[in-house]
Each structure stands twice: as structure tokens, then as C-alpha cells.
Length: 353
Ligand code: ADP
Ligand code: MG
Image 1 (cartoon, helix red, strand yellow):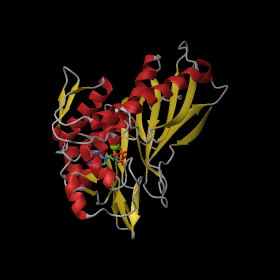
Image 2: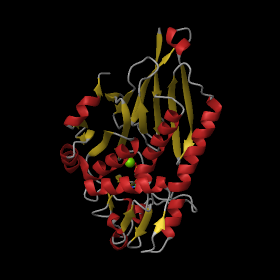
Image 3: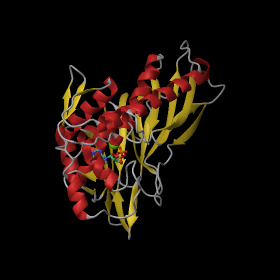
Image 4: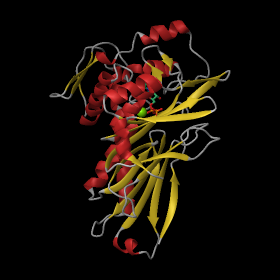
């Protein structure tokens, strides 16, 4: 006998109507499976948000829950110390302060996120751009002061001139990064996914092959849940009024990420300004795409792709996802409600609720 429990991933923001809901099935004590396997749930805080881990540990695999929690926290702390723009002496903050044209050798972790970001920028013709940081800050979504009003158009124009992912030269052999102009890098759109992947890797290292790691809404998963079937991740309607899972996804191993305009924003006279900036205009995105969910080989990739598609919006984003064979699911605002659409690649990940 099983108890079916719904584990709601916490909303991250002010008016947040939960994005993802994980449908996990926990074995009840006394049931046959619980004798053979153990289910660990860990949770904590990192990167200004929360993480939740569910790991199904097979018999014979020796895991001590507390040291595992300590290891996870340490790992995430280290990643934050590499990639955060909120930490003044993080590796990224130091790189941001290096003058232009001076090559800098960086850690493998930082290099790999910079490489992935570059690939997603190229793929999306710059819709995804980690040098958008000064605009993020100008609009009040970065580590500098928070704002609740629109910046001056001239200032936006001026700041836009500092943006351009092409100004980051990467030398893979030497793990060397050279900023060919004075750009400022912000990895917020990909770091959470990267963190989820890193935790997944740690679990694998401990012999755990069935797990679900959620970090700030981005997910890395593998194998099966406690009842022996694939993890099911629900995508919920992005509104407070209409809650309910409208689509469930699963994958054998990989990442699932959602980018939406309702998690982090400010409003001026009823107009909503998203924390996702369109690098082609310098303004926050303004379109009818409420959210896009991407399934990819890793959570970092899914995270970056979801942000890229979200920048492009419901039409160009959909075209890109179809052309590049990205598994993506769109929730689009429409009159009083929502319409949804998915790319052909998405269909293999669909599960019935
Ligand atoms: P979402 O889940 O809505 O995609 P993320 O946290 O993944 O949110 O990414 C949004 C963050 O990424 C912003 O807070 C900002 O720091 C940064 N960002 C904003 N616009 C872009 C962009 N066009 N490309 C890359 N990063 C961006
Ligand atoms: Mg993202």
C-alpha cells in the first residue's frame, strides 16, 4: 500500500503561483519496498532560494543522512563562491573586476558554465546573454539597490552599449577567459541549474542513481521514485487564482527548468516588469508567454534554454525550439486564461496525470 503525497516546490517570490509541482510517491512504513530501500529527503537554502532533494537509496548503499546534508551544503556553498555576483569576493566577482584584454585562468566549474552560456547565446542569437548584468542591475533586479520604477531611456541605451556575450573569449585548453571589452557577467539564469546538476553528480558519486534534486525550481533527476516508476514533475498554471497541474513530465535522466515572467518582477501603475531582460532592446521582456518549461540533458542546459526561449517569446521562442529540436512546453496568456503548446520533442516526456 502506498501513500501518495504531493510535494509542492516552494514558490520563490512575492506573488508567485508555484511553477513546478513534483508528484512523488513515498512508500509507507511496513510496505515491502521500504524494507529494501530507503528514501532520503534533504532540504536547505542556497543562492537566495531553497533546494529539495529526494533520493531513493538501494539496499547495500551506505549513506549517512547528516554527513550527506553537510556535503551538499558545502558543495553548494562552493558553487556560490564561484558564480555569485552577490558575493564580492566570488570567483566571478573577481573576474568581473579584471580589466579588459587581460587573460584570466578560471576554475573548471566557472569555465564550464561560461562555455554552456556561450553555446546557448550562439544558439539563440544573443537572446540569452550573461553580459546583460548591468541592465539587470539598472532595472533593480541585481545585487545593487532594488528599484520600483523604470530607469531613464538614455541610461538604458547607454547601459545596453556595455552588453555583448561576444566580448568573452574562452580558451578551453588553458581554461582561460579574456574579456575583450569591459563586460560584467551575471550567471543567475544558469547557476541554479548548474547547482542542481552538481548535487546530482554528488549523489551519483555516493552510488545513488534514483533521485530528484530541485534548486530554485530547476530540476536534475535520474532513475525512479520510491514506488519504482519515473519521477513525475508537474507544470502548474502560472496564476494564483487557477492552481492545478496542467502537464506532467518525466525523463530518465536529465534536467527540467521553467522560465516565467511571474516569479520575480515589479509593477509600476499596473505594468509588470520582469527580471528577464531582452538584450536586443535593454528592456524587460513584454509578451504573452507566461512560462516555458524545457527538458534537456542537464538542468544547467534546461535552465539557460528556458531563459533564452522566454526572452524570445511565444512565437520566435517556439520557432527556435522547434528548429533546434528542444523539448519545450509553453503556457501563453490568452484573453481570460491560458493556451498551451509544445514542441514535437516534448511529447516523449509527457506523462498522464
Ligand atoms: P527564470 O526562471 O525566470 O528564467 P532565472 O533565475 O533562470 O529566471 O534567470 C533570470 C535571471 O537571469 C535574472 O534575474 C538576471 O539576473 C539574468 N538574466 C536576465 N535576462 C537575461 C538574459 N537575457 N540572458 C541571460 N541572463 C539573463
Ligand atoms: Mg534560467
